[in-house]
Amino acid sequence: MTQRRTYTALAALTLSLLAAAPAEAAPPPGHRHHVDCSATTPGDGSARRPWTSLAEANAHAYGPGDRLLLKRGTTCVGTLQPQGSGSAARPFTIADYGTAPTRAVIDGNGAHDAILLANSQYLRLTALEITNAAAPGSERNGVRLRLADFGAAKGITLDHLSIHDVRGGDFKTLTGSSAIHIAVEGTTVPSWYDGLNIHHNDIRDVDREGIYFKSRFSKRDLVGNQQDPIAYPGARTPSLDVRIHHNTLTSLAGDGIKIDTTSGARIDHNRLDGFQLRSKAANAGIWTFNTDDTVVEYNEVSGGGGTKDGMSFDADGASKGTVFQYNHSHDNQGGFLLICPYSGARTLDTVVRYNLSVDDGARLIQNCWGPILNTRIYNNTFVNRTTVPAHLVQDDAGSPATTQHELSIRNNIFVNEGESGGYAFKNPTAGLSFSHNLFHGIAMTRPNPGGVEADPLLRPDLRLSAGSPALSAGTPVADNGGRDRFGNAVSATSVPNIGAYEGPGVN
Image (tube, rainbow, N blue to C red; front, side, top):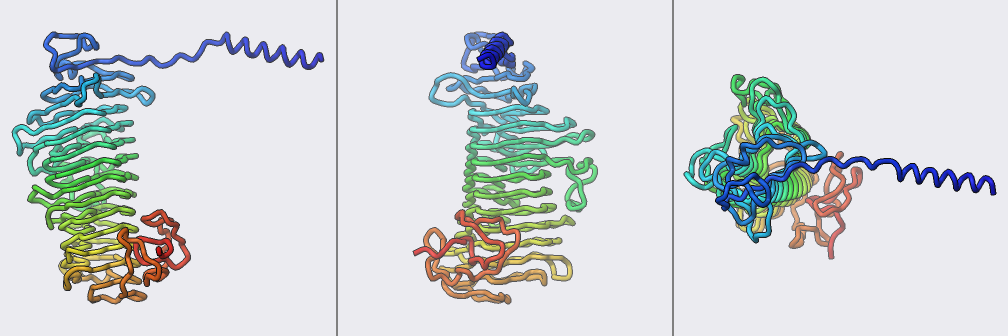
């Protein structure tokens, strides 16, 4: 009984001490600043007396936990250029307020930027409508992120924005023209983004770029002479923890999504429909430049409108370790894939696997001049029903002696259900190899050890029917990603299927 009373007394004492201890103070909430561009009475930024212009919002310095709120159902004209940053625990947020059924709109009205976020970090921009259509043809952007001699800009999120009718010129530069433009400028302090999240945005009717990156601090041997050493003074300092996902991009003059000078970026679950529609230059759907270890997966890309590039995916100059997997590409005039080091750069360790390509035209795969090293294209399914590509592989090297290609094409299905012809090999180099592919309706002109030419019995969803000759007819691939386009496990040792489907035959 004595021992039990002792435990009871200790427990009571502990509870009393806990009750007496002061609770840890919550961080202050920050300040709310309101903008109503339809108001006519000057205000102080409060909800009852909001600011009436972007100029007032731009004149204020913001800090951790602050919120800059624009009234729904109103339009502000000009450039929003707020100053300041949040913190990791208390980001600075730019959003909307009110109950009107339509969004708060920022109309750049022909300004260079509708929204400019310069040398900021720990910031979230969300839930606004952004347009910039006046004076078409000049360089401009919807949203521009700009770093100059800043160092690391951490924790930036752009989400749930509607960006449309950004009518810039046919420019692809350090400063524009894009719906979302991410740039690293400066000349003395290496700068980069660390934790940049761009998601669930609706981007449409833009001239020229959808989401575009460019950095001056990008020099390295892999780039070759792609950058002017004076204009680009800084050694490569890549942006980190970049993710671009669940965005919808429609009707773009030029490129869809282009990233530059990043390491470990992920581009996933985006829907891109309509690019290379109003540009005289070369453009692609989703592409990388001077990047390391980029993963491009679960995207749907269609509507490439030209053959000057015009393909869904591109591992461009100085791209290293790029993986294109689990994507759906269809109805692109330029084709499916570009691998393009050009002008002294190199492209290496590209992996292309478990993708579906339907009615991509002109060429399925194009190689540019320059070293293309250790490129592996395996277990993809290519089906052409209404379009017959002129080339299965278009190699633009001047001659095999002037380039160095290491490109293996294994375990892929190539089906032609349309007219005869096409699928030629333009200037194939010695480093181009085929193995264990299935060609149906296509005249083979290259050696294909272990290959199949019978009908693969594809279902409408491009899985394999029971009895398909592609079942267990491939060759094992090490480091194969572990699963296929449909979620089936892929063994590293067992003989795989040919094509993007690795499950059993479907009745």
